[in-house]
Image (cartoon, helix red, strand yellow):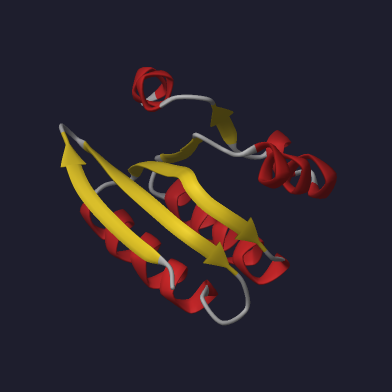
Amino acid sequence: MPTFQSAKDGDRIILKVTGEMDAHTAPQLDKALKDAIAQSAKVILDVSQMTYIATAALGVLMANHNTVKTKGGKIVICGMQEKIKKVFDTMGFSKVFSVVSSLDEAKKLL
């Protein structure tokens, strides 16, 4: 069962995602991201506890990336496990999103 924890950090939102993101959980990810974006166009997505990502969740990320971009903001992803990074690299998402290893690095980009 996935969990989503959101916290305000200055003028940005940190959204920590835990668990598997697939076709069944993608709508929950979408809601969590939309809620975060409603508070700030600067979003750090901490995926250090995400264990799986499917194409449905990748679609959610892309749609929300486009939304944030129109608001002049950015989504920075941090803490990605190697197996998820491989999916990102294969699908070309590493060229679209800023992906860094730590929360501190992500904060420097926003």
